[in-house]
Length: 392
Image 1: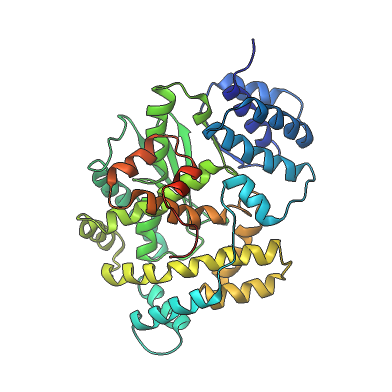
Image 2: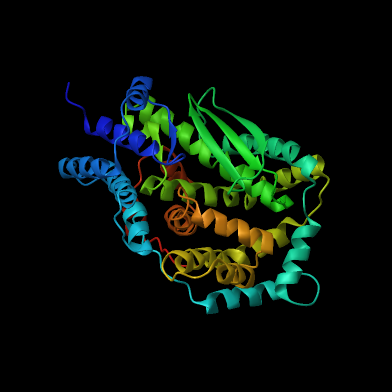
């Protein structure tokens, strides 16, 4: 029987996933496809490139073609192709990374100087403020679980959640990320939180919402209901990291916290954190600080360009992240680790450009957020809608 383009794509993605663990982030389609891939000899990256090129030639312009283009780019790197870092990022995600001038970060530091309590260097005051609202390690799981339940309740007022969806929470250590949503299919996810890293009360709120409601878990289970079960789109059963799908997904999850924290239910979420963790904090100040910090997040992309294009030493990149990103030495080192992982070396752009693209697309229209959760929206559509990919 002739394979459909969607079957060819899924098989290619699963075969790519055998080369780098985590590249195929989730798969919940027909088990026989995965079983056949696992039982067959490993397909070399060069052959995956050739198969992807053949599939691209057969596909019309559209969401699936965008996905295959990202898959092909990643397979090409594994096969020995050596595009520039910027070319690789653009081929995978549909957006070209550009360096942000340090004057943007300096302006953000000036705003933080105005907002943060105390006197002295901004970096020290920001660190002291974060430490003042740090969640005790033994309270993190309790706090995350409670925030998830409240966020689910509030998300039901924004979108219709599928019947039977649910999440499980686990605490982990020594990972290159702070939190991760593993979608298991059948409307279920496991949320992992890295308690080896310090977590502030505001970070606890944002990561719980980002990973679950109305963030990653909500998107995946809504798309399983609408696109997989409703329309039979096999390609949506595979979540492939180095593709435009990730740009949209991280954009959704990165703006998700602000839909709740700047809404009428914000006080209830803060009350949950206070009750479960014992940490009291000023949400208005926290939101103002986070918005002021947004331009500084682009220092992460500059750091990736320094590492992968300019050939900078890790010590130089570490100092850069501490200075302009206002990261502690430990967090700067952790960020460098993330930027060097095979699954995330190019991924940093998805948080940054993804946020700007989806925020501009949604605007004040919550129905457009619902559209992102349930439809195959292309990065090109977000760009055409006026989205920008530069710091705010």
